[in-house]
Image 1 (tube, helix red, strand yellow):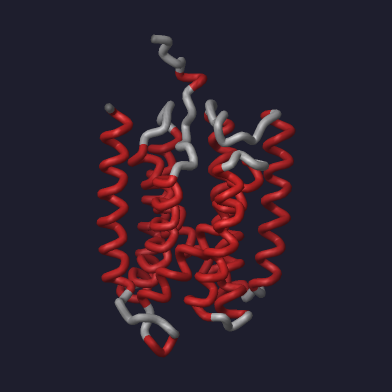
Image 2 (cartoon, rainbow, N blue to C red; image 1 turned 60 degrees about the horizontal axis):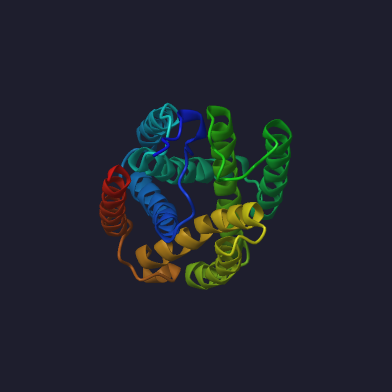
Length: 246
C-alpha cells in the first residue's frame, strides 16, 4: 500500500455529515458559553483567559502535520467562543451597524479568496496540504465567522425577527449550498457559503433554547445548554478520533 507523504496529507477534514453537525454544535455552544461566562464572572479575566486558550489551540492545530480531530475541533470551538466575545465587545465599543459590518466582512472575504487563489493557484478544501494553505484556510474560517455573526445579529436584532424565526430562515438558506456542496456543484463557493451560515444558524437556535421567555426563548439557561452541548461535542469528537486512528 502506498502511504501518503506529509506534503500530500490534507490538514483539515472533509465536509461529511459529522463535520456539519459538529460545526453547528460548536457555533451554538460558543454563543451560549460566551454569554454565560461574561455574565457569570468578571468579563475582563474571562476574555483574557479565552484569548490565551484561543492562541494555544491555534498553535496546537497549526503545528500538526495532518488532520487530528481533537486539535481541529478544539480550535473551531475556541473560534466560536472567543470570536463571540470579541464580536460583542467590538459592536458595543465601536457601535458599528450590523448592516455595515455584514457588508464589510463579505468584501473582506472576497479579497481574502482572491489573494489565496493568486498565491496558491487553488482554494480547494481538498488540497490544504501545506502550512501556508492552512493559514489561508483558517483566515477564511475567521472571516466567515465574523460575517455570520454580523448577519445573524442583523436579522435577529436590526430586523427584529428574533432567534427562532432567524434560525428557521438560516436553516433554509443553509440547506441550499449544503445540498450543492454534497453534489460537488461549485464546491468551493457553496462550501464557504454553507460554512458562513453555520454561525447564525447554530447561534440562533442555541440562543432560542437558552434565553428566557421575555426574549422569545425557552429559558433552558446558557449554562445548561453549554454543558450539554460540550458533552455532546466531546463524545462525537472522541468517536471520530478513534475512527481516525483505526
